[in-house]
View 1 (cartoon, one colour):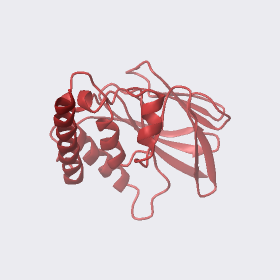
View 2 (cartoon, helix red, strand yellow):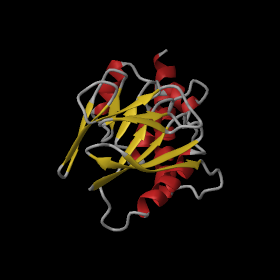
View 3 (cartoon, helix red, strand yellow):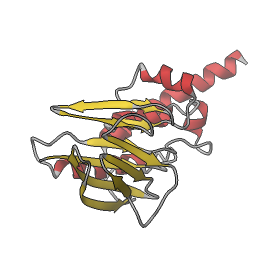
Length: 204
């Protein structure tokens, strides 16, 4: 039996103080799988951007996805970008950016499944509605994830049935030690955003 750990978040809202702490929590969960871990799926299910955060606004919401990419996400529901923004940013990030109609074919070792709300089975999809008492629903070879409100969903699923073996909800820890690599990434993104803002002011 092949087990796939699945870690997923949502509603990060371009919170630059929170993101490095979430990165630390995700790293700690991944470290539980030892030096030879199974393939791990890390997904963000939306609302990583925010009109209320300057760095998200000025970069037309590209900044949060660059930060999530540095955190090691596999696929990201980039609902802050239009299709042009997704295709343009995809050229510079490793994570797979998606909208509501895209499907990503994930393949690792001898395992293959689809991520998105369309596509063949086995498939992992998501519901935009947060449901605090449930992390997921499962039918044959189809796992539907519900967006966690303020925490990390952590499942272990069996391949290819996608039956859930374990399910945990890990609340965000505002006291977690910020991951220094993500702090450095955020500093870089802020610097680039400020340079872009100054350029825009000169052009206008």
